[in-house]
Length: 243
Image (cartoon, rainbow, N blue to C red; front, side):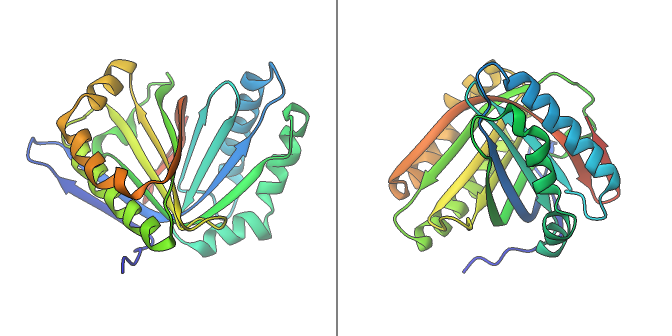
């Protein structure tokens, strides 16, 4: 059985002179449905809240990534372990504060999904990137027929993304969220690239096809949406950057 190692930062060298990193911890998936025409303002409000809270909270997320489409904005926050998340969410009630701040821009109440397993795989040298341009990517939900297959799907995706990073230096990050508080048989994924050309390169690659061989047999239902997105908080140990 796979056992998550919390508060872990791992650097892995590749055979082409690059490095990739993986952080393992816990995460929360917040989904916001904007009123028509309020998407941009909603994204801006969420971004500013996360930045401000990171400076004041005693347990800020190590990483925060926001992606958005026309119909929704998704915020994924990650902590090194569950105790930090509990302080942020329950003691400081920052999730409720965020929901209250953006309520006027929403068409319905936000939803929150907690994940005891959050894997964040990214290019090791890329956490100092100062480019403010949004990345493009995909927001994916994949469902299996059992919690056991959900764990297998998590492991298959982890293997695929670790392999992928060796060949795709312009893939910003891959986030795998597993063990959902709502449905342990499903996995959520966010994957970001610098440009659409980088995404097309990924889709046509042989390593993408290799990953699909293990993933597809496990999936009984899925959603996949194109999104734009950005990492708002990036923290590696003592190195923290906000954008």
